Length: 463
Image (cartoon, rainbow, N blue to C red; front, top):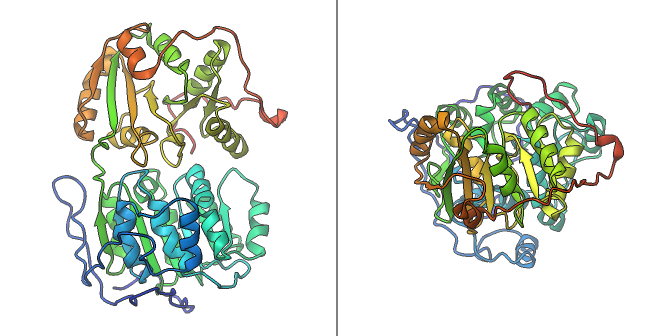
């Protein structure tokens, strides 16, 4: 397979725990009627799945850390891909959000770096993620494992001081976890050079292409030496992802588990038909429930207004959208995970990359327009085998579009009775009357309490 960007600096082959990376190449077939391309034919047979972490050929320090974390049995996507990625194979994995993809690529990445020195400005591995929150969560999730094998991880995302990230790269790092835009900025400044990268991971590849990152992702992959290992994980495999597979993956082992089109069996879907006049009161009662909830709206301005309304009515709410600084966004997520904030009001910036243990309710105050956005919003609940509910408020003018959306998402929602005080609504969501007494969510830094007003109009929210 030819690669688009030859390089004179070839990377050292990634350390292989097991079988060596084979040669040969494969190409995906044409897209089928579903709109997703047919999965590529694997020239070299895949290794059988693993039934335990202990059986995998990887450093003992990683196994001990898994044991300390209480993990003994791999998830389906981990069991399928780990034997092959540990053997140095390229991997193309399709699996729903919350299925364990971070360890599926993180463990083989770290295994190959065990005992290796870190060099200034020249990482040995790159992980690309579409959002700042997902990049930070990946780094945090891998931190106990990286520490056990002496691997340094640096996160580089927009909205944070670039000088601090530059200093971290100068000090030497093994792995860079990055959003595409910020990594390109650092590359153009010559603060991050990819000529020694041995492993490249694309996490949530479909969202990166949906968000318009295809040019940046392609430019980054062209700078990575062609001899390295590539791992691409995605919830869906459409034509944009197909382009990346064709150009940059070599004889990938393909695993498709937890079908992306359709929701998990532990997630229940509900539609609440509301009039424009009662929509806010229904949302307010749901937000006042005992327990946490993520509520989605379309625009930054609507998010800010809803958060202010809830605070004024006694609900510990906080906004999350692209108009807020990254420190604000990070602090808000921390407050939500701790329970200091019980209602997280968000745009689609929170639709991926956020994992909160025990979150059992997601509410679409504004229904999404795309079925993939619906599935990813809902994917914040019912994670790792837990159960959860997704509730969508639907006004009369939205019913036809919503019917088409649920058909494309392959879900069968239950319709609840309309009205803020409907017993069915309280049964599913825990909706109740708010106290009506204004509350304040404390901020650690007073200078960051100022709201960032969103502009009027229909401009796409900044991620």
